[in-house]
Length: 549
Image 1 (cartoon, one colour):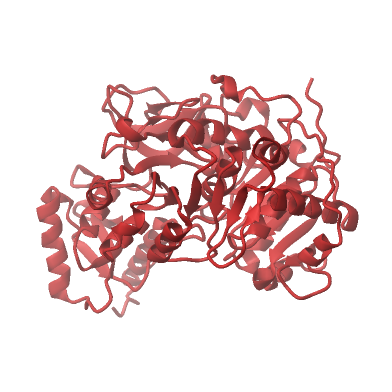
Image 2: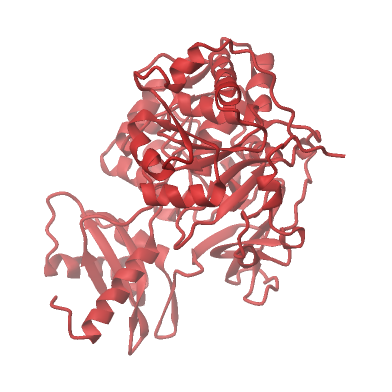
């Protein structure tokens, strides 16, 4: 019988009731893990044993690389600091805050080695947002990059120890680690002990906090990475997503370590800068969003991608036009995919000859997916409905009644509208709250966004439905123009006419609004709900006779 190592039972006590969990399936032999399992030991100790201590593990654009031996020693030292200096016991929560750099990875592994639970936070969160997460997760210690420590310290107040790294202070984590031996016996946690608390991105109100076990962390590497990316120890991973975002955690930490590969960590880089750094480092696998691939091509730097073996696109919808443009410019067949914080990483994808451009892909080995109607019944081929998935990972919210909204008859229901064809390929339509119904026509906002993006003067855009008394709603586009292009009435009509020529005319944006930037969360995902709120506020002011625009 599995024996929990957690002395502090907070996370186990706050798991959702078992009858509200989704179904969990372990259909692949590699998903049968031992009952006692520590994910950090599997990722770093086992990697050193298998590949040697001298193999490069973590690279940066301007610093010396860390070997697997370096990473093992420093993660052990972090575990020593936590347990010896701060009294951390198994099951305590430790909050992390920082950009993508080697010490953040060492801290993440060190927390798990100590048997504690990582609470991931985006480095750009403000004190009030961090405070909310502190109240939800009750961490014992917070570890923060010294450049981001002020907001953390403000949120922590006097009730939470804050440990910075990278400063010149004597009490800095790096200085404390230097005084430790680097010898640490990893806590033998249970495979189903909680290892990670990941707040969801893109939500309104109080964030939902997802709960993931030690076995869950490995399961994503042993499904999507193993079967779709097929990495080897010679691969070099690179990407834009922050490590606090589970897309980044998988692609830049878990996947490379699981297969003895190396990872390029960039703290902050635009699309072209990322591509330049990746090319200089000899990266072979890249993770970033469709927006970044489009930006790289618009700057005429597709040549920077030609050294890649695999390019992964996720985080938002990948239009067929973007896939084809990347393929034409580089020869790469972009690996599309959809994942969710609730399931940790990608669960629908395809690679190589299995790719069908314009679709997201098929269920990743180890997962099953289907389309449900509003009553929870499975739909047939080519019918539009709610995407639902089951596999070795699934939604477990920390003490949150919204668990019932995500799980339906054992399925994880992601909040995305899809269709599935006869061959099991899934095609994205919209977020379930992002389908625009205008004069009886169903219009998927991503399709309109894709069309607008093809206009040469458009940098990026976001589309929502604006309420309309005659048509029910109309397509409303918020457009960021390229530098030097003026947002005139003539340009607005030019974009509208362009869309009419690109997709069915009834889908064109009747309302085009030029803006300087689009609202995004710290992981870079567009926040369409903020645009809907902006429209609603404008309408309220207009109704009250207060709108002076």
